[in-house]
Amino acid sequence: MSEAKKFMYINRHAPCGTVYGVEGLEVVLISAAFEQDICMAFIGDGVFQLKQNQDTADTGMKNFSPAYRALGDYEVNRLYVEHESLEERGLTEDDLMPLTWEDEDDDWAEKPSIYIVDRAQLSDLIEEQDIILNF
Amino acid sequence: MLHTVNKSPFESSSLKTCLSLAKSGSDVLLIEDGVYGALSGSAHTALLTEALGQVRVYALGPDLKARGLSEDKLIPGIKVVGYDGFVELACANDKIQNWL
Amino acid sequence: MAFELNGKTYETDEEGYLANLSDWDNDVAAYMAKEDDCDLDENHWEVINFLREYYDEYQIAPAVRVLTKAIGKKLGKDKGNSKYLYELFPYGPAKQACKYAGLPKPTGCV
Image (cartoon, rainbow over all chains, first blue to last red; front, top):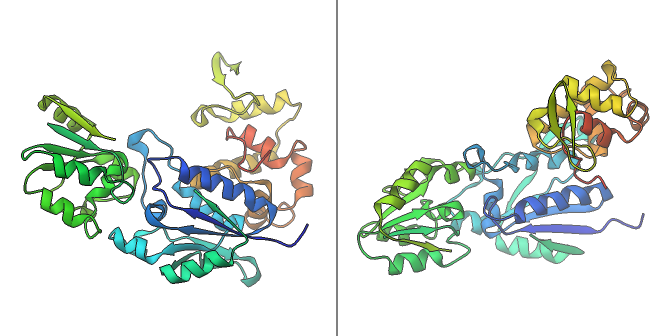
């Protein structure tokens, strides 16, 4: 295979009202099989995707938020969350699901996957990517 | 009149438009992604807090729960209702305006 | 599509995956395997039960690479390799085992 490309999946939509979130997550899980260098970014209402304690039982919809916890198994372990977007929504990092991945090369040590970054840092990260996909 | 808002205020102007046009004494029910408008400490909290003087604001409980929003995250004065409350509001008002 | 078992009708998709996760029980798994000429032994059940638990926790059926790694971590390296898993489930461990486990087809499985 040719050299791995740097992929960033940008999520800008809230989890339940539209299918962007679940569709985007599915594409990430599929593309993870191709051993590319994958990260995700959560901007705007996309930060709500990672809100903890989502429980859709009373709405009759499927709750796909637990699938974010599987991302570590798929070696997707860099999830960038824009600080300004959290702040605008009255949220802090403590409102998000604590997502981790296990480092096989470090005796399966659990490491955090969520990185809170400010707008300027995120702008630099976007610039570094080869391919950017929006959901 | 009952007004329903189903869009996130961060994505759409529906909440703002609704609140600017709703007559004093109206009921405003936040549903689906509209429930994000009920968050305290957000960029739109002031807009809603101000409106609470004129209109009654409700948020649909199952939609809050689906999004992981607990009642302590909401602006004080917003009443959480279930589907039965939604029906009661719809019956109690002669007209319904859905701000899609 | 659908099949009948013990007087009950079970809905499936066009590839034979169970339409309703909650319809599943051990008899359903055994019946589906039998249709593929596969007799389930304890090693098969170990993987099937593992997949049920994985789905329960993450709400997705894992891709084969992820399944292999996770099995290796839980049940040991001698089981967490594709040779072992393909011997158990020759049609593809994730695909075939997920079917018997009553899960949807794994995400990323074409």
